[in-house]
Image: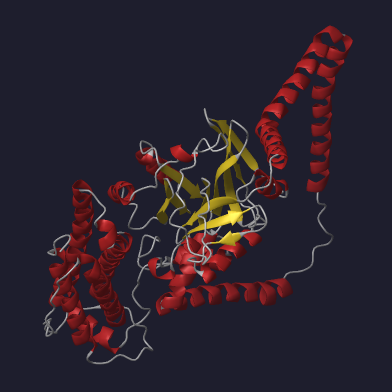
Length: 559
């Protein structure tokens, strides 16, 4: 509820707040509390009024009654400060000049030392610039090699999070397969244009070099494998955060590229082998007599047969399982996506210790890439999956709250009940979000691709989330039964059947509705109009959620 460590801030904390002597985070926390608490606002007003009276007394009484001093006091501190500064400068000059004088009188000692320092500086600078220099030289040679080859049409495959398309680039023009969605294609092209990366020929050393050369700051990593070079350039400016290019070691032919944009979109580009065009008869139809001859990949395409397979849903599930048992799938702003042959684990605003823990657990998975950012995490999550603060009790008491307080015996028991209910509400909502993400990631078609062991793992994750959801809903139900003078009876039976993926969204909607009703019942502000039927409505909503959650927990996999 609050990190102040108490229900209300103390008078000392309010005094520090009024004087502006608290940290920004603590001041903001008290400011939020004051918006919702009449009692503390009254205390703060009394403190400010007392300070105002003291200031007024000094100004009206003391300043007018005391006689003026015979003459101003002589301020000795500036003169003392100038003396200290002068002495400090003299000591520093002495410390610097004495060694230099001694060294100058004996050049055999200082000349080698200066030469060594200059040599070390040159070596360090060369090592610092080595990757960038090597990257620029490799790209220059690759561009020259590409210009020396005949300009022919190439087919490339572009793979993103939502679409797959094949393009023909080079030669006389550029074409795209007609099955591609026009709007999605236009959006992808605009993304390339915003990043200043060539859309006309995205898989080329020239396009990569043109993008890299216009960057104000960049970091290069160059590695060599037996059959290809891999150049990775990252930057903190522009729409494109990182680009990777693979070049054949045989003739520096570009064979594969990956682009990671600032908005977390990714694009993989690879070259496809040439396929001879079929011969056409006089009517324009494909001639049946024209045989299809397999084309042997040329030396400029040594990596096409060795391209890594796409990451599988099972590998993604394994990563989610690790994050689940670390507790990182319930609150940490972490996203997991399949990007071609890799599983990308990204996150923002995560503490360094938490980052290290996650990296260590995922280190043994060779196809997993972890990238964490220090930027705030609020923009990376959907609004409905991230709230800025937890639910809290309202500032005052509405009519229903006052009635519940009388029933419980005072404000303190009411706030204790509300704290417990809202804490468990936060927990069952986090489980509802986790189940919803599982259902979206593993719909029936994707679940069918999993092995038997992987399906058991998926079921175990679902059961753990569902069981925790049921446990917290029952906890809220039990506390309201003992506290409210209302019969918690579910008048509408709930039947759950079919696939668990199809039943996850109704469960999430029911949890949302129960959360809304509980907030209206226990967290309302004094000026909010409340219906006398609200306790019964909240009870019915909670009972419906409990019944649906218990039935959902019993659903089998693949039914």
